Length: 196
Image 1 (tube, rainbow, N blue to C red):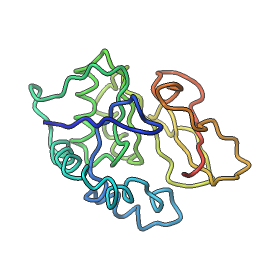
Image 2: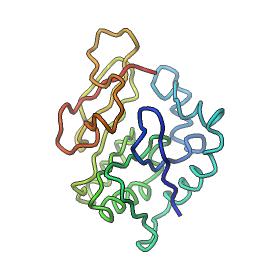
Image 3: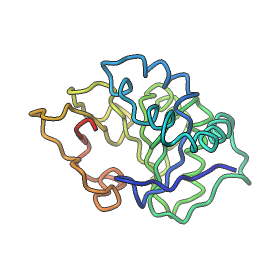
Image 4: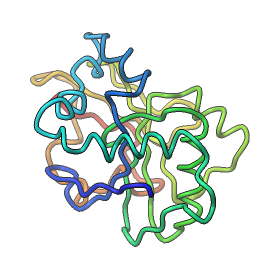
C-alpha cells in the first residue's frame, strides 16, 4: 500500500506522496552538486536527522512507485489537493505512469508534481495525454536564474538566494491558502522563492 504523508509547515493541509530521497540515484548525484538547490536539499538533511522515522514509509513508496501499480491497488484520495515529491524525485518511467494513473483514478482531486526529470516527463507526454487534474511543475535546480516552464510543463519553481533583487512571489504563505501551484491554468507560471 502506498503511504500518503500528512505534511507540516508551509505544506500543512496538503497530502503528499513522498519517496526516499536518500535511496534515489538521481537525488544522490544531484546532492553532490553544491551549486544547485539539490546541494542544499532539505529532504536529504531531514531524512538523515529529525525525520529519520519517515524513511521506512518513503522507501516502501519508492519500491511501489518503481514498478507499475496494478489498477486495483491505485490509491483513492478524498483530498482536494495532493503533492508528489515534497520529498524525493521521479524515479523512473513507471513512477511517472503511476502518477498519471493516480490522477486519472482520482478526478475529484488536483495533483501537482515537482520534478527536475525533464526527459522522463517528455517521454511520458509523447505516450499519454496528461489528465486535466495533473499539474507538472519543473523544479529548477539552478539558484538565482529563474526560468519559465520548459515545454510540456505547466509551471516552474525557482529558488533565489535570500536578499536577492529578483522578485519573489512565493513568500511564506501556506500552500493551501495560496494554491497557485495547485490551480490549473493559474498565474503566475514562474514561481520564485528564497532558499530556506
